[in-house]
Each structure stands twice: as structure tokens, then as C-alpha cells.
Image (cartoon, rainbow, N blue to C red; front, side):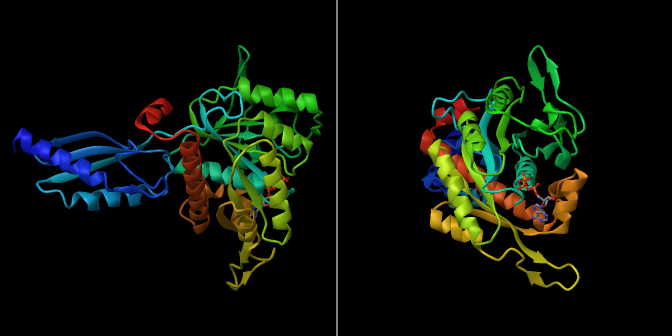
Length: 366
Ligand SMILES: Nc1ncnc2c1ncn2[C@@H]1O[C@H](COP(=O)(O)OP(=O)(O)OP(=O)(O)O)[C@@H](O)[C@H]1O
């Protein structure tokens, strides 16, 4: 095949890909600058699709759409599509200093305690990591910092030349309020002390390169939570709730708190949705049904998904091996993967609104 024939095919490929619409951004892949390194040799086509997050739930859909678009281009002998990602970053919003190496910060919060906020934060971190993202966790829950226990972390961070090196578990660096006090000792934080520790976590920790830093917030929407939300450069917040009627008022308070500090809400996760009895297979809505979804609709924020009550989640959390690792193929792990994908998509969309996606921006974001 001659060079000019290959050139004609390359032009046809770009034209065809110019008709493939990215479902989230509602623009075509070429306009979005998502196609790179196109090579055509003897009719064999190779190119790379650059996604805005490795955790993109639409990865396969986009690949299929490309293949289908290329079927109309004459002369193609074979197609090799490489899917990769350069996570876009939220940038430093509202004049807050960004965390070194960290592209996006996700705050996981709840209107009240005990709804499974920490469990959700841990499992979403594992899910994002399984989807290919680089993830870290900051456990800022002053009242009950139990993320190290849930992840089975038994070592403390190392301090070298005023820099903190967090312990890693399952390749996820973890910093926690729990490291700041001996086990069992009550953690009583006064405002300025809390401010100092969180500032250190943001400024002095070597997180490495992260696509997402998941922050487990203290439960509730009081002053401590508000000042934390103010201090941490959050890209977006996830509100965890149970399905009862109070879900709406709890979520509303969460929404109001983040609105005060101009943090966008990524959406609501409903935890402890219903209980599927492993013995009689009866479905019991222990904490009622649908509260999370109603709250999301009422507050006009996305509903990110629901997680049922399941003994396996509690056991996995207590044993330091979260469900996504203990039972990666289970429907529960699938549910977390789906929610993680939704969150990653929402962040990509937010970042594109904050800073329109162009080839230049994608390059800067690497
Ligand atoms: N979907 C679930 N199914 C079964 N058990 C769950 C589920 N979600 C959380 N749990 C369990 O409920 C308990 C409370 O969860 P967790 O500590 O995550 O809540 P929290 O909202 O972070 O609490 P706190 O307010 O103390 O920070 C834990 O024992 C956890 O294992």
C-alpha cells in the first residue's frame, strides 16, 4: 500500500472519529483532543484515546463507538485502539493551596454518625484504584478515625526532614488522625490544634502522584466539619446517607455546609439500602427505602448509587481487608465500582466546566 493511500485512510479515520461523541462531554473525540498518536501503515491503523480519568465507566462504550465509526472507512486492514488516561485536575479553587501531586480531592461526608461513611470512603478508594486510578486516603474523622483499621494498616508514617511519608496499604497511601495519638487514647481536638494537624496533612505529607485523594470527613455538619471543608482543597463532595426519611434533612445540611465553602456536590450514596437474607433470600428494607434517591432528586444533585446491608461488608471492614479485595467479583464490589465510576465521571465533567478541556489542558494535566 502506498504512503498516499495510508494518508487518505488517516484522514478518513480522523473524520470518522470526529463523529464519535463523548457521552459525558457531548462533543466529539477529535474536538476534545482525545485522539493521539495516529499511525497508519499498510492500512493498519493504530491510535490512542486519552480519557480524562482511568476510572472512566464509558471506556468500553467509547472504544466500541470508535470501532463502529471506523467500519465506514475504506481500505483499513486492522485497527488497534489504545485506551489511556490523563486525569484532569480540579486545580486550586477558591484560592486554596493545592496538595502537591494530588489532582483531585474527594470529601466523603455524612449528616450524622454511623451511616457507613468510613466504610464507603474505604471501598470507593479501593474501587477507584481497581479501575486504574492512583488513590490516597486522608482520614480526618476526628471523632473515630478508623480507616487504618479498616485497611489493615499497622505501621505508622515516617517523618524525614519535616516530610511525612504515609504507610501504604494495597498501594494506597493512608494518613489518619489515628496516627496522632496512642491507640485507645481519647482524641480531643481543639480548633487550632485540628487546624494545625490538617494543615500538616495537606502541606507536609508526601502523597506521591495521585489522581484522587479521598478524605473521610468527621460525621455531621458542625463547625469542625465546616472549617475542615474550608481548609482542604476539595474538588467535590460525596454525601453518604441511609434510606430513611431523615436522609433528606441530613443531606440538605451536608449540601448547605459545602455550599457555604463553594464545594460542588458530586452526589449522594445510599448505604444500608436493604438486607438480602442469605438464608430465606427475603429482601428486608431495614432502614426503609429510597431516601437517598429522593434526597438527590429534591436537592437536584446526582444519585450515585446504593449499597445494601451485607454481613460481608462489615466482616471485611473489621478484618482490614475491604470487600473489593476480599471478594472482588461479588455484586457488592461491582456496586462500589459503579459508584466509583460515576464519581470519576462527575469530577471529569466538573473539571471541564472549571477549565474547558482542550488538548493543551490535557497536556498540562499530566
Ligand atoms: N453496607 C453495609 N453493610 C453492613 N455493614 C455496614 C455497611 N456499611 C457500614 N457497615 C458497618 O457499620 C458500622 C459503621 O460503619 P462506619 O464506621 O463506616 O460508619 P461511619 O458513618 O463512618 O461512622 P462514624 O460516624 O463513627 O465515623 C461498621 O461496623 C461497618 O462495618
